[in-house]
Image (cartoon, rainbow, N blue to C red; front, side):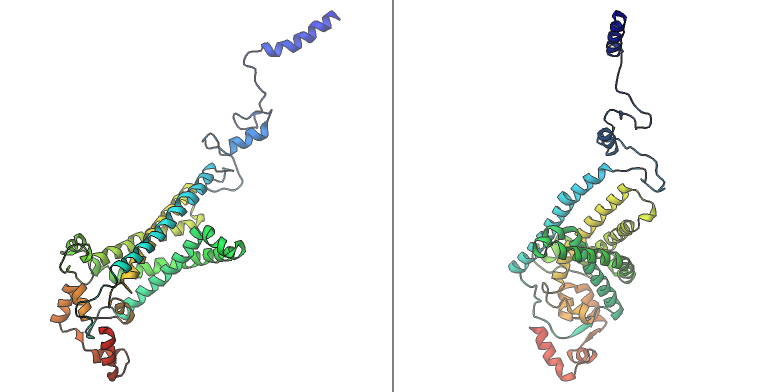
Length: 350
C-alpha cells in the first residue's frame, strides 16, 4: 500500500515539475495551434487575426487559391460601404447642387445681340455619331454603376429588396455587357478629335479667367477652348483607366490576385465618379446653360454669333474663308422649306 501510494503521488507530481510543459500539439495542425481547443484556434489562424498570411494547399491551382479566408476582404467591404459609397454619393449630390445654384444665380449664358440665324458647320455627321455613341454608352454605364454603388441605401427604402434585386442584377449584366463598347467608342473619340484638342497659345489665359467668369472682357478661344480641351483629355485618359480596370474586374481569368481586384475596383469607381461629376457640368453648359450651344451636336451647325462669342479665333476663320451659310440655306440643308427660314431665325433670336 505504501509503495502504491508513493507511485501514485509520483505520477501526479512529476508532470507539474516538468520544465516547459505545455499543451500537446499535433504536427498536422498549423503552427501555433494546439490540440486542446483546435477548433477556435484553427479558425483564428485561418482568419489571420494576427495579420500573418496563412496559405495552405488546394487542388484548385490559381492565384490565392491556397488562402481559405482572406481577412482583408472584410476590411475592403467596410471601406467600400463607409468610404467609397458615402463619399461618392456626396460628390454626386454636390455637383447637382452646384449646377442648380449656378443656374439660379447666373442663369443661361446669353449671346450679345442674340442669335443671327446665319450658321456655320462645326461638326460632321460622323463626328456627331461618335460623340453621341460615347455619350449614350457613358450615360448607361454611369446609371447602372451608380445603382450598384449607391442603390442599396437609396432604392431599397423606396422599392423594397425584391425590386432592388432586379434592378441590381440587370444593372450588373448591362454594365458588363456595354463596358467593352465604351472602350471602342473611346478609341473612336480619340481618333476623331485629338488633333483639334492640342493646347495652344491663348488657352492659359482662358483658364486664368475661368472661361470669362473672372474679370471683365471677352476670353479668346479657338475651335475648342481650354475648358473643352481639358474635358476632352479627362474623358480620354480617365476613360482608358476606367476601361482597363473594368476589364480586370470582369475577367478574373487574367490571373490577378485579390489585392489587384480591390485596387482596380477603387480606381474604377473613383475615375467613374470624377467623369460623372464633371459630365454633369458639361451637359449643363452644352444645353440649358449656354444659348446656342446644343445646336452644334444636334445639326452639326452653330450660329456665327455663338462662334464669335465663345470661339472668336475659329469664328474669324469662318468669316475669312466665307464658311457662313444664310438662314435660308441652312433651312434647306435641314430639309425645311425656304419659307421656314424666317421663323427659324426668329426662334433662334429668342
